[in-house]
Amino acid sequence: MIHMLQNSDLLSRVSFLVGSAESVERLDETPARIPFCDEIVEFLNEVSRELMNNRAARAYSDVVTFAFWIRKASVLKLKERLEKKDGYIHMGKGVVFHIAPSNVPVNFAYSLVAGLLNGNANIVRVPSKEFEQVDIIASAFISVINRFDGEKQYIQLVRYGRDKDINDLFSSIADVRVIWGGDQTISELRKSPLPPRSGEITFADRYSIALIDSDAYLAMKDKKRVAEDFYNDTFFTDQNACTSPRVIIWTGNHKEEAKRVFWEEEHALVEKKYTFQPIQAVNKYTTSCLVACTDAGAKIEKRTDNLIIRVNVSELNSWLMDYRDNSGYFYEYDCTDISELKLLCDDKRCQTIAYIGDNKAVVPLLQMGVKGIDRVVPIGRTMDFDLIWDGYNLPALLTRMIVME
Image 1 (spheres, rainbow, N blue to C red):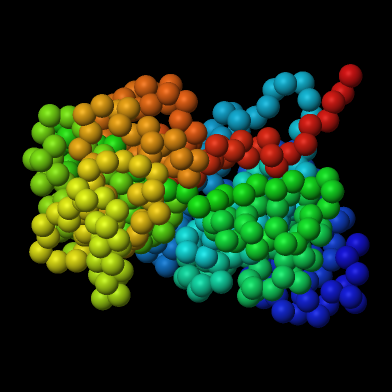
Image 2 (cartoon, rainbow, N blue to C red; image 1 turned 90 degrees about the horizontal axis):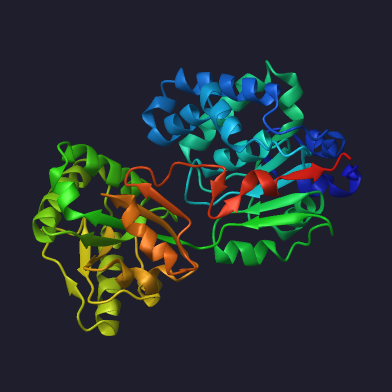
């Protein structure tokens, strides 16, 4: 048991959105569960209903998407796909300490559910930045927990500043530590030791790209829907999500026509929906100049304003992502052979390829043995969370196997 007299001062510096210091004290008494147990499936389904019936929640597409993902039918599909039938007994590892990224509002909730579905008690550090989505989801969990008393010990949503002592405390009782937020966050958290048998899952800085077949795009009837999908992948998070495409690769026979139509549709949508700050234009211009110094063939495409900056580059190399920016900043490249993407995708930082066209076009690239690329998904689906993520099999990493002979 955690010695609360010793740690009461530390926990007094923690704000509990869900849970309490007393609950943290009893975490070592909380039993691990089998993955996808009936109790948690029913509990999450009720949280889903709570969110779906919340008018404030319906104002945020990321909250609605999360609510849809945790409904019973969706969770049972996950169970059917991922449940192990290997003759071993699978159990949660115990306590999972999650550190959510500061710039993606709903990521903390997906990480929490990954821990819950795999049979664990969870301490989740939510974003330090105030997001209404965090409060909406936390309120839904509180409401449902009051009807599912047995779940109280499994969910601690906390908020605190940069405090190594608190990181030390939560790490010391963690059977698994899950770190989102990038390289700097990982380095900082690794200063807090874990128990010898504990594991760690880290989600480092990554980047993503889009592969668009110009012919396939021009053949699509609902181009406004495509613009919405691309907006959700990029502008919705200011391109801060690792899944947000930053390089647009054009293939096919009608690249210029497809670009014209695609960006006209996207600009009209961004102009209508996106809140743009002057500092974003300054940052994007500065980044463009830095790239021009490195790639003599780089060219800023014509534009009427600074909402969308497109920089056409003459070659694809991993160094390009050292000059990535956000808030509507894109590199573009005209591709004639998929092998031209090898240097960009041979970087372990390369995470997702979002595509329009035939996803089989990526297969020859994968067969080259590139060290990047963990996901190939349609444009509009880059932020769809799954328990196989960033190349990690989360169910395998969040559970232990018991051999019965």
